[in-house]
Image 1 (spheres, one colour):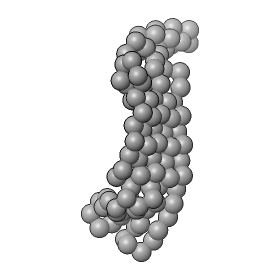
Image 2 (cartoon, helix red, strand yellow):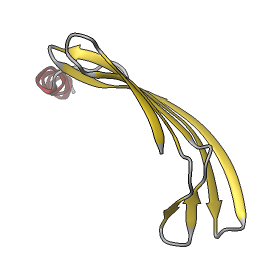
Image 3 (cartoon, rainbow, N blue to C red):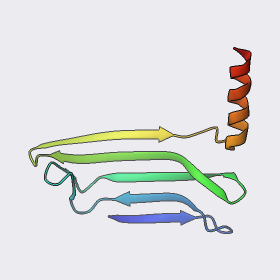
Length: 99
């Protein structure tokens, strides 16, 4: 893989990572391979003091199955509304008490 990472200047936290597969990567032995041209992008966001978490993951996945069947899949996942566990637990407990 080849990649680039962008970091926040003051804290040195990674903000963005981009990777590209340049040689086939076997997965599950000979059953499948991730092929060159696969691209992965991960964006991070600050959610608290010195805590950065994944905001978005985008992939353009090129795969070969059994070395005969090739496919491309494009996905994008977004993660939002990060909150400390304690506030989430309190919210869930208050909802459970209302039922």
